[in-house]
Image: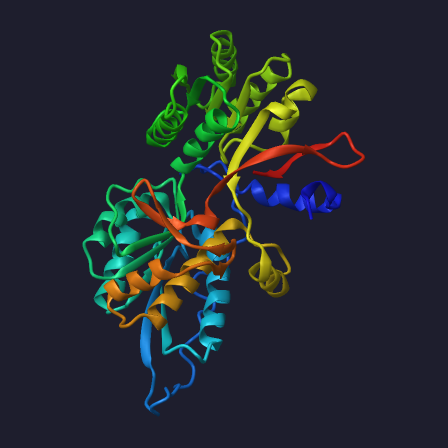
Length: 409
């Protein structure tokens, strides 16, 4: 069913869920869910022994899940733990698998040392697969460590983390945030044939990496030009508005905005004042309904949002039935991380990391929280293609003057 034909409540739910995207380390944002009691979230045990066709007990696959049960990311850990639980239930109920599972959970404490310590414990205890972490700083620090160890590390979300290296034993569900820049650049240049771009961004690695990814994609074909790349303070919205006006005056017909909500709202407001041909792309951090409203009647069709897909299908139904709420993106990423890594370890020729890696790469159109996906390699990182970012367009609700972001490209 096309989105335009769905009832209004569908769009309300869509907006509420999509607003969960955020950049690294933004303590001003509220937690996404009430916290669960640390250490009390259920992780199913191995259950009764299962026998293989030869009458002997099946080989055990040991999976270590690293999630924050304490610290500032504990609420994110609680949501992801819900997705983990659904995946564990499915895997343990599948009697056709050649191996059975033993589960361990480690608290990363929402810190970089906590993530390294949890990984060290998981590896030292002889686990075949390690899932996590979720904290961007911890993920950035852990990637080169894990790359040098003989164990599969499945990262639910790379996101704002910065992968310095990658190896055949590393996999992710969600790609790095830099994919937002690449998608926006390709959409502006290849799909809309725009020729002059400007990038407004916050200081630091996050803003710089997304800026560079956009510029690389936008200038990949002849005839494209970047007229401005401006670093701006996140607490001065008026400076962002002026920089946007200056860029458009310089001929920019494509603006890529890497900043928090208030500066993004100020930039969107400049589109409500003109009827020109310039378009703007906002990252997951920036967008919420007031930003779209700020674009006004003249600008609503020329602002675009880059965000991730939402969990759907059987996973969404199971989550809704179990928790009486719709899943956030992080729950779907955790579900896929455990399910896919577990399936690969249970069906690979051996539980040695090289064989599990081959099994993961060989998976084709495997059902998951975001659809039937495959592992792809982009910019040196292996992740699930269906769990990446998308361009989301503004659409007008039927028989209404209300606009929402709901048209996926």
